[in-house]
Image 1 (cartoon, rainbow, N blue to C red):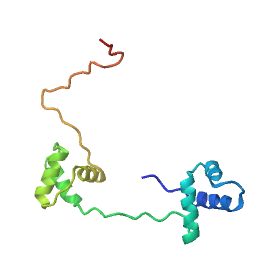
Image 2 (image 1 turned 90 degrees about the horizontal axis):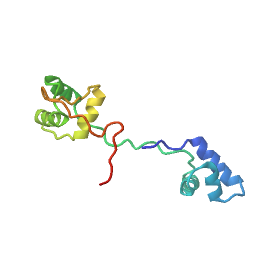
Image 3 (image 1 turned 180 degrees about the vertical axis):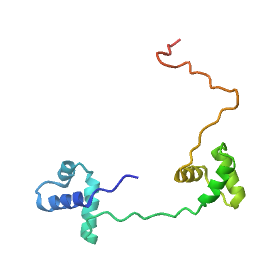
Image 4 (image 1 turned 120 degrees about the horizontal axis):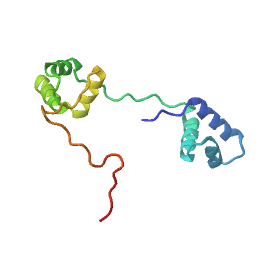
Length: 136
């Protein structure tokens, strides 16, 4: 998610809106923000006397146990993420999404690397450098 605009910018825009004879759209263009953003800032100032962004809401904290995932990972380090997901669910009786496993692995500093089967190599691409497809 993008960062909110700085409170300094908000204050400068609101000051310009108050002091300048320019229209709202012209001020928005001058500060390179959308007219809707300027309108929202003006409304927040009138209703709440607030010229800064609200703090982040936070969301729900993750409740997964990283130590369980680390133990499951260290039992067999070449497991796929899907296998780690299943093993975590078996250990904790708690479902965990694929993306949550990836996020926990990243937080633990553990990496996943695909492992080829013994004696198996990927075929080289036929569409390498200099190759082109011709119609017909």
